[in-house]
Image 1 (cartoon, rainbow, N blue to C red):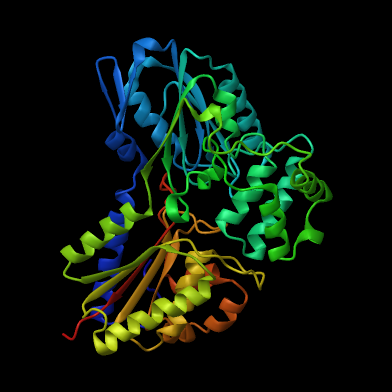
Image 2 (tube, rainbow, N blue to C red):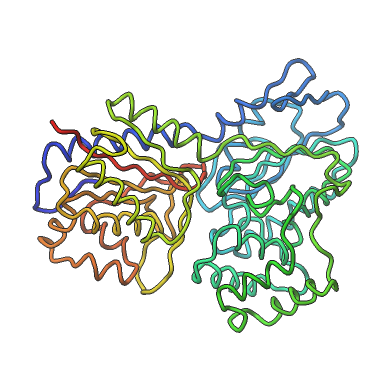
Length: 455
């Protein structure tokens, strides 16, 4: 993130760029998964306490760790350090490159956001480990964002390739994460509470890093250990909402239709006895990230406004609203006076119109950059907290009121790049990509907008 090109930004913008970098880094640090595990888990003699529930480890023959997600490795590492020799083994699935130094737990790497065969092989191993656990064992499941794609185990009627195609169709049509996961759960042998079913009658503790709006347990990573509130009929409604029935693999549609007719077993629902020995606990979420960023902004002298941690909708429209708020603050001092920092979290969606490369955060930055053209008092940044925005190696991008002018000096047409969904190559040439590398956490997105004061 350099703000490259021959056009030189003002000192004011350069200073705000430096501040915005500091703000997002502290926000990310607040949701480091190992620290989150340690905040909620402790051991005192034989008592293993998870938040407000204690387990006497002498009552268990074995302690195993399983799970999946982008943050699973550092979560497992923290548990190994807390429990020490009590951990007998385990297996987790992570996204390629999202690793950590674990001793007893085996790590499988797999594909995300589109599942692959490596992920399926790991899921099969995790499911087998879950089924081997007895009533005298304690199973700790670590779950984080990405856990749905990283634990692909389709029902026998569906192939992995058909599930991959379905995931791509849902991503490209603009379906929300809630909608995508509802479908995933109903064509999976492990999601929608079915992993908890496999673990039962062992005692199950699930430590969860949330990457979904509202922190719904049955939605995070497709609710592998939580009761499922969605139904086969909901899946059909989603198909019709986006007009994709005729695009889906025939096996997927037929299976869901049979489920809606009661000919296939539904996912476990609230009240099912399999959840009597299950504790599900959220140990980190988007709000923690946003609040840490807010405090840092205040320490740097900014008046702050948190819009929401539940922002969703089409990325370009969300960018327009954020731009309007920033321009209002800059011009009138309403609802807060500058220097100001506006923050929001959540997760938007991109409707694919072109053939370019990018992600929702880079597209947000490009869209808001077009809205704040010549407003040289505004700097905006949007990043995915996992360090990966869409199918790219960037976490997001930074934009300011000079973006359009700087891009024109480089011979770039930002409107054309936006139309082609090619935000990555636009910001790559401008020097404004934000690359963090894998952060090993995932709590949706963080958006920060700084507005200069009068001086």
